[in-house]
Image (cartoon, rainbow, N blue to C red; front, side, top):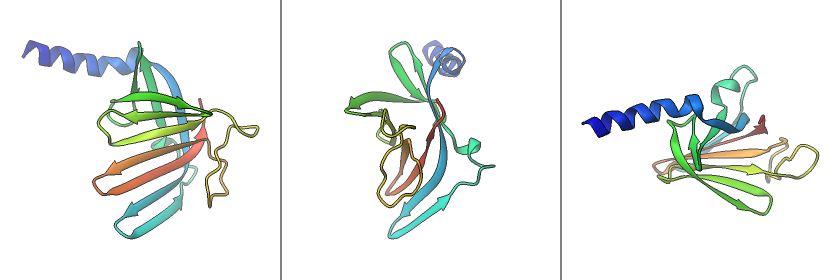
Amino acid sequence: MKILTLTACLIIVIPSWAEEVFVGIPLAKTELSGEQLQRTQIDKNDQLEFKVIIVKEGDRFFWKTREMKELTRHQRGRFVTYQAVDGTGYVRVGLSGGATGELNVPGSSLDVGYLEHLKLGLNTITYQGRVSK
C-alpha cells in the first residue's frame, strides 16, 4: 500500500518539475470511425483547449495533456516521434522545412508542424497543428 501511495504521489508531482519540451497548437482535427471520415478546422477560441504538451523528467518523456502517458522518443531524419509506451498514440514533430518547420501533409493547405495521433479502439483522431514551443 505504501508503494502504491508513493507511486501516486510521484505521478502527481511530475508535472510541476518536469521541463516542457514541446507544445503544439492544433489547427485541424480528423476523426476516422469505421468508414466515416470527418475533418474539421479548430476554431481559434478552442485551439488552446486541445493543445498538446510533452514534458521531460530526467531521461523520460511524458504526454502531459494525455494523462501523463509515458512516451519514447525516436528521431529519424527531420522528424521526431514521441510514441506512447502503451500504444495508444504518438506525436510527430517536423524539425525543419520551410521557414516555419512545417510538414508536407497531403491534401492539406495548412502550415502543419506536428501531428498528434490518438488510437481509440478501432477509431482514430488526428490533430494537425503548429509548433508553439
